[in-house]
Image (cartoon, rainbow, N blue to C red; front, top):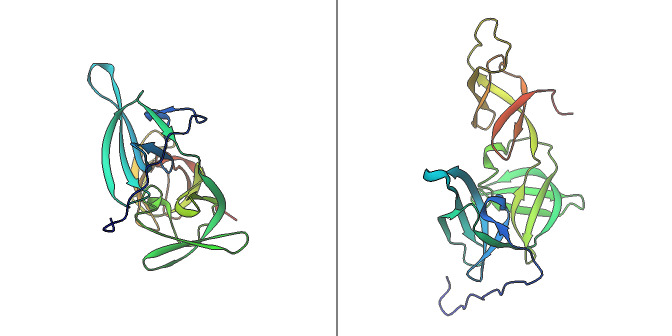
Length: 207
């Protein structure tokens, strides 16, 4: 925080419906104690006595500070309406990842900004993403719900297993490890659910 800089307090918007903590997803923004917080991670778990909680990693969009906190799944939060623009990944220029829209405007984000999607950022990816803006500044990028990535390393499969129920570790080109069906092989393309990071199926190579 810059000495002498007063961080503005944002007042709740009565026209916006509250959401439960469970409904708030990564790369959404919530107004908490008058401050806009980007939700970088949100993990839903059930604790004892059948209660459910959401563990969140948050980044303050005004100060840049980060924190981790826990909410009850039914706690109410106020979402902040964000502007979004379709972009594709262009290139990496240390320390930033550069995305471009259809008008060739470039948007730079570092790995901290992209924490929730970093496991799936790879060279040459063609996914149409969404740049997320807060007060005119790009703050993160959303990937499509389903993406296709290539396996660069995995162990051989168990002989004859085609059920898809037996899983094994596999690595993508950026080093990310995912669990895949045992019949998957090196150079196979697979579908991944970016909300969970889980393997969905084998896929055709993107065109």
